[in-house]
Amino acid sequence: MPKRQPAPAEPPAAAPRAVLTRLEVRRLATIEALELDLYGGFSAFTGETGAGKSIIVDALGLLLGGRGGADLVRTGSEDLLVTGFFGEAAASRRVTAQGRSTARLDGEVVSLRELGDWTAQQLTIHWQHSAQTLLSAANQRALLDRQVPGEAASYARVYQEWQAARSRLEELKRSERERARQLDLLEFQARELSEAAPLAGEEEPLQAELNRLANLESIALGAAGALELLSDGEVSALPLLGEAVRALNAGAKYDETSAQLQAELRAALEAVQAVAGELRGLSEDSAPDPEELDRVQGRLSLLSRLRGKYGPTLEDVLAFQARIESELQEVRRDVSDADTLEGEAARLHGLLLEAGVRLTRAREAMAAPLAESLLRVIRELGMPHARLDFALLPLAAPGAHGLEEVQLSFGANPGEQSGPLAEVASGGELSRVMLAISTVLGASTPAVVFDEVDAGIGGSAALAVAAQLARLAGRRQVLAVTHLAQIAARADHHYKVEKSVEAGRTVSRVRPLAGQERLEEIARMLSGNTSEAALGHARELLSGTGAARG
Image (cartoon, rainbow, N blue to C red; front, side, top):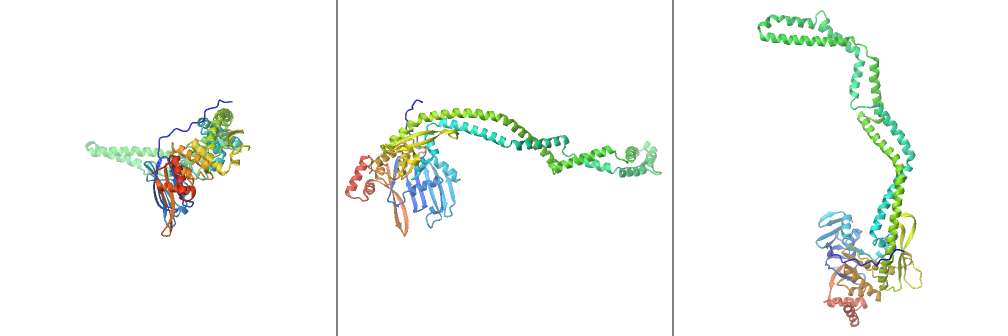
């Protein structure tokens, strides 16, 4: 058996990051306007049934990104606005009567998710029914894994890698037949294009050459006619140009201009002679070369077929060729991967089992100490015979979170067998287990809000709950909506939620209590009245907790 570890220590006091210092609410349900200054330590919110105590929690829930329906907007108003000040930072949310929301952080518009994510770093709310989350196997496992974060994260990382390898391998196996068909097609297409070796822009010159070959007779006739005029006719250009050159012989001896003109005529004569020579070749070439004609026609026909299959342009054909060569490499790589992934998946499976064993041993080492720490608090909360433990139930195959499922087993009464918490615990018992978890494990945020988590308890259990909340307030800002005088008396700050009718409209207000007003409120919570007996009891409760104010 692994060596037992000491019980988990309470989280060290964290330097306040950003407690909730002020809450402003406009036009929310029965609240017309509320400006509430808040402080560190333990704050209690009390009031008669129906006064709207939970509206404060609802307002904070809007800053966490909770549902912001149009039904929350005060009747007759166009919108509601909630602003929370956390130190120097401000978070706000406006909801219109049409149900549209606008979220801001320090005045800058952000998405609702961004607002919720930011506020969740400052504030945690334990709602009336938050204890229901303990019914989830995932949440039960998370409680234990908070004690072994390194081992849990290591297992999760290897599991993801193993799953990725398995998924890839299964995909390759499922598509093996399709991949073989695709490989045949790609190889055929690649071979066809490689043998054709099309070149960008080659069709235009080929078409021009085909046109030339097809019209050689017309070209030859035209060349013969031009040749007749230049040199072969009875009267033709070349002899006349020759005579013009000779006519300037005498003048060229004495006149520079004549000499220059003669030189230009002589150059023209030579140029015309050269043209005549080429025209003679054209005139004699009146029949195309059959092999050359077949070659050009065949090449153009091939390029046309390629465009029909892979086009419509030759540039498209070349782009298709590049694409299938890339796809061919990928398919060939898949074939190779299928061979190597088998070994990789097996290797990762081995690593996963090793990580799973380490996680199991870490869970076993922390399960009993954590359960004992929680159990001490649960027994203080009015369940002296309670039993609680973390059961590790092996899985048939490695799961996403380990080699076993984690289950909270619970028993509240002596002589009764423990069973899964989700099956045997009552609503009140769930609330007290949740409260124990909240105080033993603390909260990761500077501010923690409890919305009537004391429902269903009283007497000595109420005093124990109050003590636990006060203890947590030594490390976090605690705001608690409560109906229990024992809890309100332990608070450092006491606020009363009141409802009245003004000008025919219901209005809820919140105001701080101190001195005589607080004493009377504690008395009302204890006895429903402010008789001398109730006041005396309230005074004893306040002085007994060292919480008397004013």
